[in-house]
Length: 112
Image (cartoon, rainbow, N blue to C red):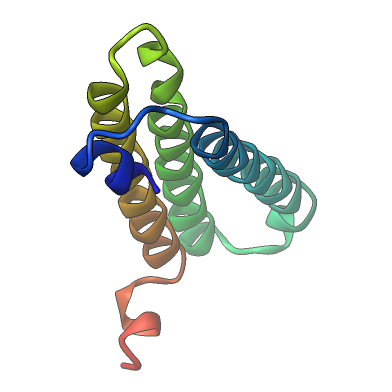
């Protein structure tokens, strides 16, 4: 939707706004759920696993912040706004993938 708005030079409409809002709400909600999970279950883990958990929290917090950068560009023209929002959401998704991979280590995700 954002790529279409950007590449086809369409105007920023209500559906695009709602999609970006839904993404930001879901990432924020997931961060809060994950933080509460670490708070209540985290004390049962040993230190080596907690180190990776803290790295996971840090990366996810950065992903949350990057995902919310889209609010800075509300005054830009529609195509430029769509381009910058698409870049920030893509970076946020990449950081989420990195954070999830960091939680268990790459060996877990690569089947090693």
